[in-house]
Length: 99
Image 1 (cartoon, helix red, strand yellow):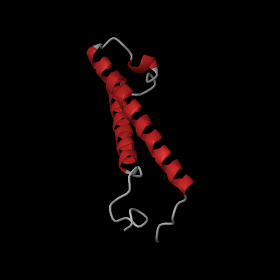
Image 2 (image 1 turned 60 degrees about the vertical axis):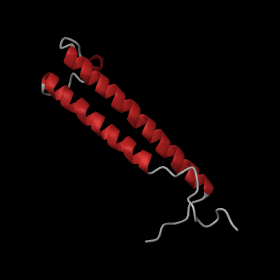
Image 3 (image 1 turned 180 degrees about the vertical axis):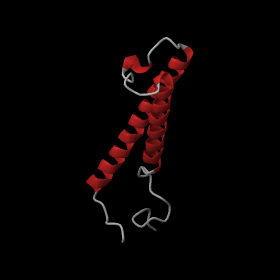
Image 4 (image 1 turned 30 degrees about the vertical axis):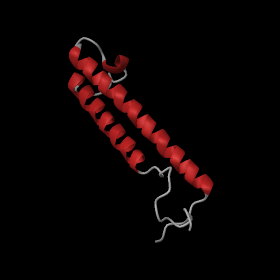
C-alpha cells in the first residue's frame, strides 16, 4: 500500500515525537545504567530508592529488570533517531533546487 502524503503539520508532529522519544530513551537509559552501577558497587543500597523492592529474585532480579529497561529504552531511542525526518532536502528531490 503506498504511503499517504503527510501535511507539513504531520511532519512536524512526527519529527517532534521522534525527538521526544529519543530524548526519553536516552534519559531512561542513563538513569537505569547509573542505578545498576550504583547497586553493584554499593551492595547495601537499594536500587532506585526501593522502587524495585517488589521484584522477585532479590538484587539479581532487580539488576535483570534494570538491564531490560535500559535495553528497551536504548532500542526505542535508537529507533526514534533513525526514523526522524531529515532537516535538509536530498539532492535531486523534486521541489528542490531548479535550473
